[in-house]
Length: 326
Image 1 (tube, rainbow, N blue to C red):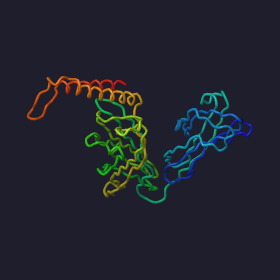
Image 2: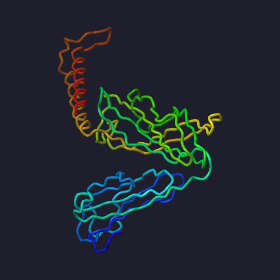
Image 3: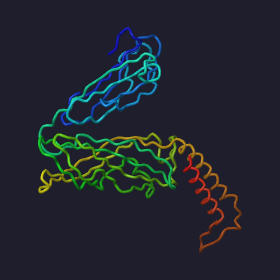
């Protein structure tokens, strides 16, 4: 923690600070404000290589706040040895350039060799899914990672035949009307590799998602809205693989990715789609009420309005054209 006679002080906490083989670590950024006025701070948390792992945008700390939590986040830490993380915050521009009141805090997480033998999953995580309107549909990619650790102290492990089981779940995304949610093929990278002794390897899982353009989206809590921006979903993705120490005897391994993520939609697309859906509803109603019945044709006992159908079809194509360019 920094000097008490400063306007504020900061501290970076981590839990746990000791791991076997690696795993998830929870980081907390705390601030003490010694003034009678609210203070606005900005900065980042970086790893031992100087790479930023968490940006901290302007955040207001109340006057006289003590042990105030600015943010909490989770990282997967792996690789035997000490891992250092540094917090920087200032009240000027969020950059360590000597301007403003600058403060640093550092924490160390130690990863020790994992006892035992065999392959272990030490962690898994998924990114939030971000939908945008492309190629006549709302599209996104579900991206997840698995951290596999070779706990053997001497021999490397060979991995192959990684596959996702068909029983995987996408949570509330699966509550879409039948036929409106389509998924592509799982992409797994790398699909075959070796893991040296006491080392962790990251495997990336990606799944393309496509939602029908007829599905309404919005930030509002309207009952007719199916896909909501900001909604949280829980994904469960079981997978299997084979591993071997000598390539003669192969062992079956089962693991699972489990995470709660947020559904995000391009804000321009949300606003545009909401307006266009209202407009299309008006066009559909106008078509039914205003187009003269003399244009109707009958097929058996069913009567159609070809002009109305054409107007609705054209309006849908116009909607798609506008959404793809927002």
